Every structure is written in C-alpha cells, then in structure tokens.
Image 1 (cartoon, one colour):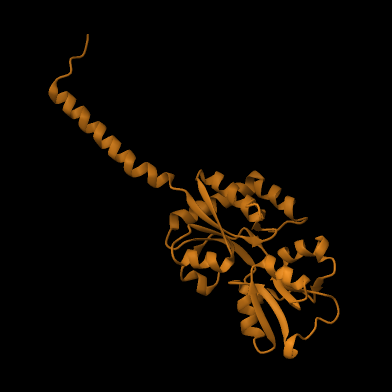
Image 2 (cartoon, helix red, strand yellow):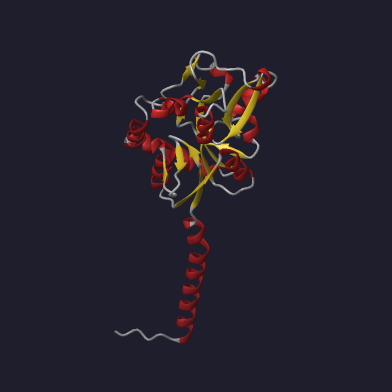
Amino acid sequence: MERVWRAPDLLRLAGVLALSLLFLCVWVPARAAPLRVGLDSNYPPFSRVDRRGHAAGFDLEVAEELCQAMGRQCEFVFLPLDGLLESMRNGGLDLLMGVSETDERREFMDFSKPYFRARSGYIGRPGDVGTGKDGVVRIGARGGSVQVSHLRNRRAERAEVVQAEFGRLLDMLCAGELDLVLANDLAGYSFLLSERGRDFEVLGDPLPLDSFPSLVSIGVRKGEEDLREEVNRAIRTIRFSGAFGRINRNYFPYTLY
C-alpha cells in the first residue's frame, strides 16, 4: 500500500533531518580536524627540509606511521627546536616529535611513552680541540635542547656556548667556527659516517646517563589525555606491526630501543 505523508509526519521528518545535519556539522569537523605535528626543520637524520622544500627523516616517517595508525589526518610543521617548543607552549601544536621530558617542559606539555633512547657526546677533531678566543672553548648545541641546559649548568664559566640549528652547528664545526658540538649520539653518529664528518670523531665517552634524560618521547598538547593515550596505542601498533623496525633499519644499523 502506498504511504500517504501527512503534514505532521513531514514536520517530524524535517525535524529529524535537521537534528541529524546539526549533529554532523558539529561532530564531523571536530573529529576530522588534522593534528598539527611539529618536527625540527634542520636535524638530520631525524628530520629536515632541503632547499627545494622536500622533507625527510626518521621522525617524519615515524610520525606518518603514527598518524596512519591513529586514523588521523596530520599537518607537519617544520621549525627549529626552540620555535617548536614556543609553538607548543602557545597552543600552536598538537604533537611534537622527538623531545625528552623535563620539569620545565612538563609545565606546558604532556608526554607519550618513549619510542627510542639516546645518549649525548662531544664531536670534534681528534687531538687538540683548541681553546678559542680568550682561551675559551667554543661549544655548539641545538637551541632549546637539553644539551644547551647541560652546558649552561656545567660549563658556563669554561666555554662559550653557541646555540643554532643542528645542521648549522655542523657547518660551523666543519668551518672551524666551533671547537666542539654536544649532540644526541644518534645524530652525531650519522654525521661521522658522512663524507664531511670523516675528519671528526666522538671525543671521550658518551656523557653519563644521569646527565640527560635518555628517553625520547612525543610531546602532547597539555591536558589532552585522550590524545596522549591515542598516541601511546599508535606507538605500540607500529612496534608490533614491524613498521617502526623498518624505519629504524633505514636510518640506523642497530635497534634504537
């Protein structure tokens, strides 16, 4: 039998459709909003953007896998580390790749479970590292890094501390503008294996584990516990799927965690 639609029926149907459309307008964009993920713009081999605007690196590939595991669209934001930290402080980022947890950083962001670990050491020319101007050794460290904090606290009176992007620090080291660079051992290892790193080496042993946080995590927008748990689940997913191991092998000859 053919259904005859009366005015009250049509009004009720219109009301249901209107509520449905309102629900979609409110819910879908919020869920579909891309995550803004911060990465260092000049930190090989973890992440970098070349002169042509092409982005690459270990952390970028890990971030892409994490976004896929979460089923989320992501926008990647490339800045120097100190700029990324400031953007996270001001609410401009949802996630920040490759940061260690410190008391200062906990004030404006939360942290995922660690996804790799690293130590720090000095890179320089073998033998005499020089004394620099006025007998002060010139040491470079990535701006905003835990290495900078270490140098300020431990060597402030005996060294001139230069802050810059990591790639720029390597340029300065090769040009003789720095005596040493204090760096994450994984980033330093990659440089030493390169053509221009052949005249340099790690000077002394890596610094003691208690000198720096050795575990590296993903910074998460402050107070977003659901997002933090989502990231933690994604980290487990890419570990168990083998995706993290594949990326690891592409950049380093040993397991990072």
